[in-house]
Image (tube, rainbow, N blue to C red):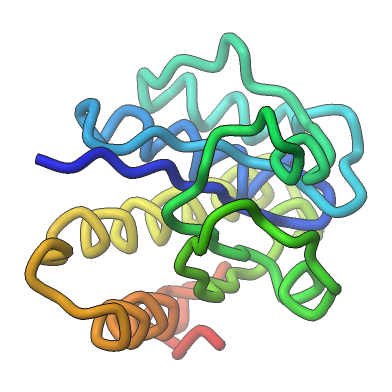
Length: 175
């Protein structure tokens, strides 16, 4: 089986992209290696993101907020896929990535922007992790070796438009 490197991008690289990195590194069973970065990395991982990952028995050691320039250099691992997980990062001009990685936008609401009680805020992070886990499951089940580049691009975009549950519990299509 082929091995794929995947980069998740968000503006701050403190929550959604970090959660996606940790999930895919566990779910990918060695078939996928995930990384994350941000256009304006905060330099810290949101403590609620770490708490959710720990409750899911996912390793958090080594997770840190970093700028996406780390993955644009000649010494960076070649990416096969790059997914933006926030609308702001999707709208920003990205670096030129080495190779020809497939890209798609998998926007999700920012759980760090949710206000309320500690439990409400934690629920937003759990909802984000659940949405990412569903999308990553779809990614891992794509017959990548048998899809041409155009069909694969469409399939990756479709995953980003899959139905999700919003932080208030209502179903909606994610843009």
